[in-house]
Image (cartoon, rainbow, N blue to C red; front, side, top):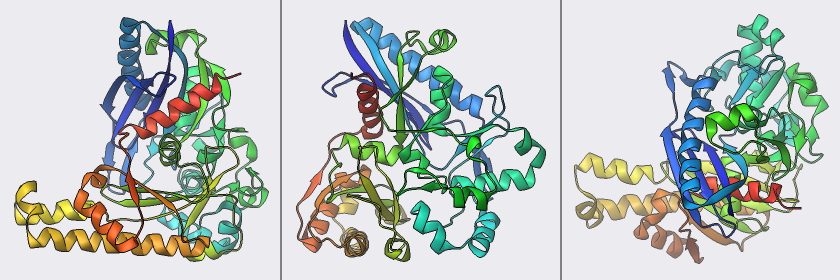
Length: 404
């Protein structure tokens, strides 16, 4: 039988399982909405509900693979970067999972900034204190639920939770470890200084491993609920944005991934972590790539391609009529200008001007926007045609975990 490799994608809006062959050709796909509970500060999840949804899409994909005569060589997971699951000694979740974008941790981020400071945090972790990061969620849990925190044993990032559920192994890759704001990025280890500031012992966090490392095997119990073969290899995956970059070949220094959706994110591959402080001063985050020996610099705009659709809806027009209007030309130009300005700031702080620019995301299919960006920047911009890049990146890491 021919081997397939599955990428599981735990995303903000959907949970997907996608199987690919050794040449990255898609074989099967299934998705389900991410079970989400809205709360005044944003949203939260029940970890077991997330896992039930993941099991459902995995069963669908493994059923398809059996019908097509493929076996499963390995699986790895990509996930949102800043949410985590506090588990007890038996690995059971103890509280709802705080969504990465939830605002309940604003007070903890402000207190951290006053007490620890942005400069030291960014020098070590590559990011300034912000409410989204895992350390702030840990602080909130410890302050508001001290008894639960005291009984908790491990904090697992979302992809790590999936790995644990599949195999019983606890591990986290460096790309996800870059998001709790507790990693010494340059040293590729948990930071003693940041852990002390957070009041978190290193034993609360999963051991660090390279993305694409085999960390365990699918248990018999999980084989029954997922359809995966018992003993199937489970590899270390990574953060969703970084896995997508891997799938699109954005792995060498000087390559820029421009993800244009409702928001717009800019991901620049770098050779090494920069601890000078200039990246943080420019509101540019740094972290570790899933590609070995690579780091990245990342920034973005909260409003990207979504502004174009918002203007269309304001006018009450269909897409064809809207794109022929003067209003469309105006807002597309504004979005292109804002995006290229932010890219220029990113390249300035990185000390480079020549990049290979790859665009992805729903708004990258708007040829008028891409043409405007090309005209403003003078760069060639390639538009990626892979629509399942995050899951493909995880599947590539699964395949690596199965390689000798």
